[in-house]
Length: 165
Image (cartoon, rainbow, N blue to C red; front, side, top):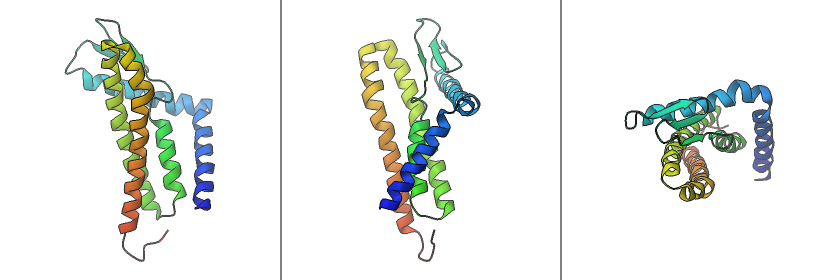
């Protein structure tokens, strides 16, 4: 258990440090975040043609309400926590890669639902928007990370005997 915790913490610190580097932010994180805004707006547009995305911002062209997807709101940090846990747990690399990919996708699907819901909650009631943004959705996102990790552990538990790390 102590080996898991040590590897988890080392990978976590390394990935968070890497993520915060200006070149990584400019080349990876900010373009990824902008793509989340674009995708979210594209999913909304069939139902509300007054929505546009520019950069990290999703805006309503009629009422002027807008949300900006900032660091901490793009799911990258949640994915880093999952990646650190998966890499710290001994398992064959193909299982680890599968868990990271599946986990990243589930985090982002839930995060897009979060972005869209917050976009509409903010237009309806800013107090509820703030509470949901600061308290409810962060719990759901981290719960998603925990569920994916538990499912990963269950998958490993059921793998055929003789398959080792």
